[in-house]
Length: 144
Image 1 (cartoon, rainbow, N blue to C red):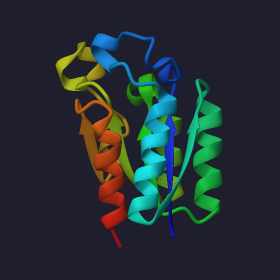
Image 2 (image 1 turned 45 degrees about the vertical axis):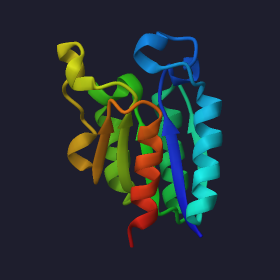
Image 3 (image 1 turned 90 degrees about the vertical axis):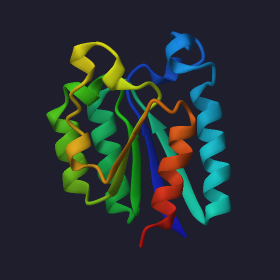
């Protein structure tokens, strides 16, 4: 069974409460439940983790890589635009990675247009709301 890590960065624990006009009304718990159920149907085991702390996210990427995970779905939140360390952890992990954003970061403030993760990810899904997690999971499930 293919193992996929679902990693969510800062403030994503506030989904459902935080700016629902931008991020929707689903909670992170609902997103994880949906991804876990979809993963089972696709023959994948999904493990989820969220933290507001950069080092905790990096440690989890390392743990998943060492545990033989195949892929990573990452919504880095605000670290998308600022964290070279998170980018380096993704590269070092060797995990097949898809970057996900609930909102279209290219249609928002200028500082959100640049992602440090996009250039090293196999794919990027932005602006598709919570469906983006499902698209990313289906993509990784289909890869060899």
